[in-house]
Image (cartoon, rainbow, N blue to C red; front, top):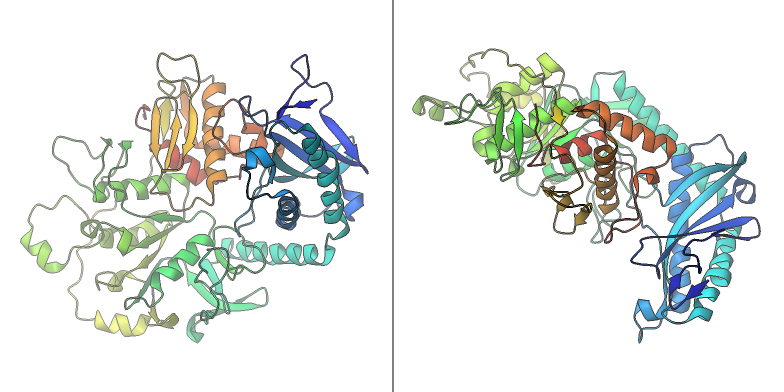
Length: 546
């Protein structure tokens, strides 16, 4: 029964927490033991009621349905809204509001029960305090009625358009994998975001590729960025960083109307920046830092990295993740890490830093890692670039030949010995725990200030630019916790363990890692990449990396 905003029965358990309405199931569970007045409800709609095909992309279907469902939740809240009362007094419906990327989530998914297929939508409900009649009306009348509205208005035409978009996006991704290109930007794409950051900026210039770098893929024409070294340059406020941000967003597919639907980037890409103050544990940074006083650069560790050492570590870790494309903006980089001109090389006789200009070609030639660099203040990278795109008021031009002519009389660079790029990351199980030292109670939290708290760790994740939402951060936290509590090995090969965990989440559902034992978490999870999970673990200060 529901009583004073809490959901329970006299025995403390619920024998059958499901109720039905027109073949739609409503499964009720607690969100957290301290928030009994905010239950979680999973609505399970049979495929046949929606006219759905079982042999279609389930992630696209779930994403589309969730976006349609948001407006119905808003309609429900409008019906019960009373500005003179708080949500706790008045009651409220909550659902996850997705960004414009298409991802696997726990807020919408497909489930097979007794060989019957269901589209599932997860919501939470704030039950009105001490108002049992209204709570029952919300759950048993208003909610089923709005679900019926969703079913009646479910637009299969719009769904098929979403299927077709995803199909074309994935075909472009497959083309990239088999070609010598690492990114594609379709003509007509719109990069600048509106003030809410949820769509294209009205009146913004649509992208148009320079003709001499234009390619056609799957019937679309646009700019292809080849593997190797690409420099994006131009004056201030010309659109350089906006283009790089669009490429960074292109690791994921976007929904219809985003403006960047056909900005498609190698899915292993990482944005690399300086991250002063981050923790680094036992990593080889010798390709970029030859020596550091009172420290080893072959197994470098620090709790508070400098700009140059943090950027070096970020690159070495990205290579370890399997990234084949680095996205770097000079505005977010350490200057002394990126460049050192001839005059400074002549003046400084004992420079421990090998600037990125000296390694960027080797990265591609030795380990197949391409780079896209936004450079506006130095010509040092022009001589090592394969392709140079000049942005002028958001209009791109191919300036490769012009820039190469400017470099004809430059002194030839002295070729430095190739570096050792391969690293393998293992940790011992010491301190890899969700239990703080001396405590029998787990600790897990995602802070709004940019930290993940797990066990004794406070992990600074403010320098990670590829996170899509707090829901993805929550999924990473729960996955790390699950690996920690279930691990039986003395040594953990991080890449293998996390890859298996993500495969399990993809197969069994993202929600498999969730636990209701931790207050402060919203109920929503989004599937992350292995890159971001490893990035979080690599910032843990108490782990023993070997």
